[in-house]
Length: 511
Image (cartoon, rainbow, N blue to C red):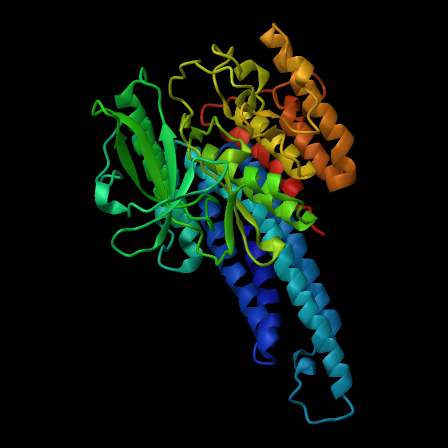
């Protein structure tokens, strides 16, 4: 990355300018520290990429270059604006100056500078919301030289946790692909958690506590059919758990797994696994499934955007871990709410169908319309037509984002389940031709997106949903279709296109 040196030089000049004010006021001091923390993380990542991208996928390399150019533009603009507050004199903002005549002017500049720092932090965080997911696509590349370059970076500071996370996930993926064993087991003994558990409505999730410490944990229960290859399935569960053990909400954007429990049926065979997750480290006041929230009542536009952004990043994180989820729907999405809507976060759970992206698929489904609704038409029915790929997860994401946008559950969890009041598909559900029914329902979802979303969440959000729902179409409506080949060996290209067409557009949304 030939732009690394000028980037670091420009950034250091800006950081030095704002450091002159870190002792001026508690609020400004805190903001300066915030900018410095973001810069430390950014510098660590960009320095690591300087040599890594020599061995990276061409399209990923081009994306990094484009991201870096955007960041340089942001830093130049931020640095120039600092100059307008101080006229080049760093001491002008000090409120400690004794002159009474200048004090009102200094207070005004003080306020403007504080506002500038807040905008700078927001701008840098928005940049990271697009760049960081692409950083984790390095986990998919098989070139061992990437590991060599990453291992040369220091792994001892908070700012280097992303480098450590990429290395850890790469190790798991490479050993899984080569079918090599790893030290330590992810499977836990029966007494690992307490017996008291509280079920979350409209999901397979229960809340429990660790037996030893009493700390809260989240149990994600997965159930498998009797005829499944249990040895292969245990291998998939183990490999996924090892990746999830490397994850943290602040890095990959997935909840951190701390182990898996095996559950036996009456015949003594494994019938269920329970992934044990830690809640996110932030203090949240409530935890619910997305389905439960959709049924409960309206939320702010801030909350919708926050759920959409974090959910989308989670989908890419699963792909970056070399897995496909295969069961993305509101029942398998946990939402953590703080006292402020803008702190809302969504995390993927429900990993019962997840498998390595390159693993054999059984091409077996079901006829449950309330699940097929979230599946691409080619993946519906008892015998789906196509092997599962990441684009099928993207389609499922699009249906969920449609629900978030209109904030209306498309499935009413009655007995039997029935369509939501905005989903007019009763006629399609009665069709004897299941293939025609599936494609008609997809067209109904596209019609809903075009009809309701522009006025509720804006045109950019609408474009994102339409891009997801048409990601496997062969005609001009598919924004992914401009790419000649989305099926490169390591799965990098589809990840980059996903960031450009989906994630980056959502990142630009704000109130």
